Image 1 (spheres, rainbow, N blue to C red):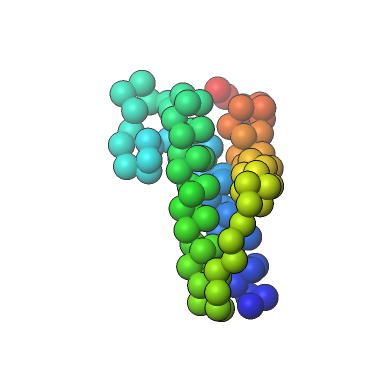
Image 2: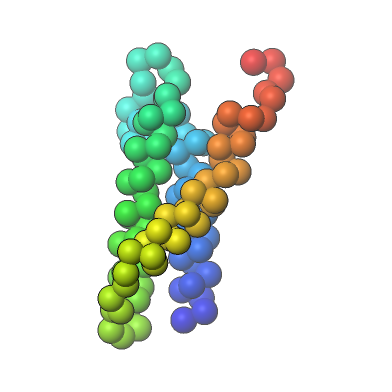
Length: 100
């Protein structure tokens, strides 16, 4: 069970940073302008939050009963996912890239 928790946290960290590191829209199509705007990145971040939530639900189902959660649980998880996305956001928007 400890391994699955660690795996889930690592997957969530990687998934939260992917929208800021990959220039393709939904990891498939390159935008015509060459750069994704922030709205696409936010949409991808939201989509990946639900994908990771599904993975977490599957992992929990493997260990037994799935516990019913209230809205507070999902609010805390969404906040944690946004915090996990911070390094990618800093790299994309706040880090000074040389030669750009």
